[in-house]
Each structure stands twice: as C-alpha cells, then as structure tokens.
Image (cartoon, rainbow, N blue to C red; front, top):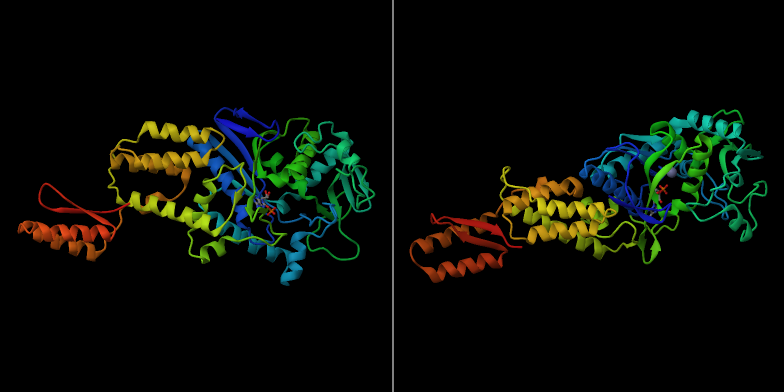
Length: 461
Ligand code: AMP
Ligand code: ZN
C-alpha cells in the first residue's frame, strides 16, 4: 500500500510496526455542537482508511477520541486564550457541561451509524483520561520541558529540536514574523498550555486537582495521553483534518516524543477540507450544514458518503446541493442495477475487478478511481450474478449497504401490461404485442421472452 505521509510530504510504502496489525488514531469531534458535514468528511476518511486496510487483510486497532473538555476558542490569534467551547455552549443552552457533552455525543454516534462508519475499538473521552494527562505533564516536567505562568503549565517548544517538522512552523521562523503575542508570559509564541488553571473570577464546571493547582488539561495533551495509554508509544497512522496539522498535531508530536523518547506516529494522514463557495466549511464561520439538514432535504446519508468518495481525500471538495444530487443519482442507479440482478451465491467473484479495485485503494486510498472501477464492472460483459457477487465484495469497502437493495419489485401495472402482451403473442397479434412492449419500455422497464413462452421484466438503466 502507498500512503501519502504529511510528515515526509511523500508517498511512502506502508509498513506497519507489527506485521498484519495497524494501530490507528483519529482526532474526533469536540462535542459541543452538531458535527457539520465538513467534520463528517474527515470521519468518513478515517472509515475509508480503516476499511481499505481491512480489505487488504490487516487487522486494525482503531481509537477515536471525543473532546469533552479543554478545547478553547482561539482569542486574537492565541490558541491558549479563549473560552472553553463546552463551558460556553452550556451557558448558551442553559444546561450543564455534562448535559451538553452527553447530548452531542449521542447525536454524533447517531450520525456515525447513519453514515455507516466503522466503529473504533474505543471512543475515548478526554475527561476519562485526566489522570493520564496529569502523569504525562509530570513526566515532561521531570525531563525539564515545562514552565509555569500565571495561567497554566506550558510546554517549552524551544527544547524540542524537531519542533516544526510537521507544520513547518519552527520556533525561529515564528519569532521572526511574530505579531505581538497576547500572552506575554509565554517564552516562545509556539509554546502551548499543558494544564490551564481555573480562573479565579468564575467557577468552572469541569475542573480537577493537580500538582500545579486546580484546572483542566490543554486540548493538545488529551490526544497524546489517549494515544499513549490506548495504543502505545509509537503508532502506525494518525488522522485529522488538515487544519490540525499546523498546531495541534505538531504539539502532539512534541509532548509525546519528549515524554517517551520515541517516534510518535509513522504515517500522518490529513483530510483536505470540505468547502462552501471556495471557503472552508466551519462552525466558526457559520457556513455549515449538518447531517440532519441533508436528511431533511430528502437525501440518504449514504448519498453524502458517496459524494465524499467522488473526490480524493487530499483534494478540497466543494459542497453544493447539485453535487449531492448528482451523487444521489449515481448511488440510486447502482441500487437499481444491483436490484435487477438475480443472486446466485455460487457465482464467481471477478478476480480481475477485485484486483483493480484493490489497487486503487492501495494507491493512497484513491476512492474516485475505485468508484470508476465499480462502474466499469457494472458496464462489463461478465455474467450478472458474478457482477453482483463482485460488487458485494467491493461493498465491504464502499459501505453503501448494497445487500439491502438486492431484488426489487416490478410494479403491478407493468406486470399486467406484460401479461396482456403475452396474450397478444399467444394469439399471434404481433403488432399489438409490440405496441405494449414499447409502452412498457417508455415506462422504464424491459420485457423479455423466455423460451417457454413466459416473460421476464427488468428495470431499464
Ligand atoms: P472539531 O469538532 O472542530 O474539533 O473538528 C473535528 C475534525 O473535523 C477536525 O479534525 C477538523 O480538522 C475536521 N474538520 C473541520 N472542518 C472541516 C472541513 N470543512 N473539512 C474537513 N474536515 C474538517
Ligand atoms: Zn487530536
């Protein structure tokens, strides 16, 4: 398999640490709002990667987090300065932080199921790993990577010589072009909070005791702590949206590698954005759609899944309702075609098409080309029962629930017309029989005659 590694900025041959097993982590949602379909593009990508690995025979140990504390709104370019997204939402909705988190986790898991995304072994919640996060800070402190300011414990990025390897933002080049940093106590603009102290002015709902004082863990820290405790010091694949590459993932690398002395992640995979009118779809810009909005407009969530697959994950995908309609048409056509095939479990699966399909997945998860192979198969001359078994095998990756569409009903009025035509034919009234054949065709169906004088009706595609 070839994977584009954002760290080396190259297509690399994929070699897992342990033969046959892939350890994989994806930065999940911050559960303070409904995820939008930009977020779902990333979560769908993690499913495509997961399923492609499975399709290639790997076992995958997959963990995704749910950020339920500590993710701050950026303030004047300072990621450490804003309000906590969950605490703020709790005030806005007049609910407790716990109610907010529980509600949006439920919503997230519902959408996850509707998009037919593969469940990780564990969805980890940041608040369930506070002890691990405190231990990680203590280790970093012991090794001399931290310092305290009036508002928290910070990581000193100048002490990690490869800081900037992923993001390109080194301590030096940031210093040169730096604006006035809103937090003058930070030693370097790239330094980030590991632990934030609870403000004295107001009581936080989510806060914990720590050796440094009452407060809460920094957002970057949670992912490191969860990866290290669930998957180990070095993992194979880490996924996230491309906006996380610059700061969040760079900081994950810094604190993890300084704590363990080992390489943190072998392959970094970043999803390009889902765009609206050439801008990033985002919660903060308010230009987003949720999955419920998509469903309320009459779409199947799997139409969206199909739309995501039409673009390579490293290419921005511009969202329009027209593009979604066109994905819906394509998917419905696949359902209709699959529905027209008769199933024979003994029919051969085409090695040729499976191989071609697998090659596309092995080529840095090239979903648009994998879809092209699906269409090539459907248009090919191989027997229909073989096509059906082949596409069902492909659906282990596609996740389009094709099995549910096998065998469709021919409407009664079409059957009645076909019966009438059969009577004309039996009586040798060929011209009238032909008029009915054309009428049936005009209604979208094809009537065929069997050698025994019966008829067979199929949908026309
Ligand atoms: P959040 O819930 O804001 O923490 O975001 C969850 C994930 O969705 C992050 O990995 C983001 O990078 C990703 N994400 C946010 N907006 C988009 C977008 N428009 N397209 C693709 N991924 C996105
Ligand atoms: Zn993360």
